[in-house]
Length: 212
Image (cartoon, rainbow, N blue to C red):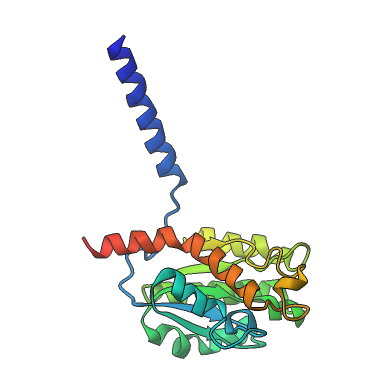
């Protein structure tokens, strides 16, 4: 009876280990030696509609206890972001780059194929620099939902982190936004919490690897 119980317990542990192994997503450059988390994006990253210090990168820095650089620029498309990638991201010793782009491509009716190729190039160049990449999904209800499968596929193919629906429940809630499209301080706080909740395990794994 005791041996049978021990075998059952051992089997449970083995199954748990297998499931954990399957669930773990392999991220490229998980052992990055960079120092800074860089938030690279448009007005959502810049913090349009919020007071100074209430943008999501600043709030994320407080949650993570790490250096976070706000590399957001209002009104920027993926093509424009690609042009400043080297100076504003690659040359700033990135550990992890959180890419939040695509909203202005949508507003300017830029073909999805162009957006996809630009995001692909951005991810590849960041990874070539040795940093991890996280891609944010901007879908909010029906708005921007066509970009979700595009960004999700890129994240899977490039072994990047995918952060789903960072604007969910914000754009439709007047208490969480400053205008039709932008969050307010409370909305940015929610974005920071969502982003941190996803990237936290990878930051912890990175810290563990650096200590080895």
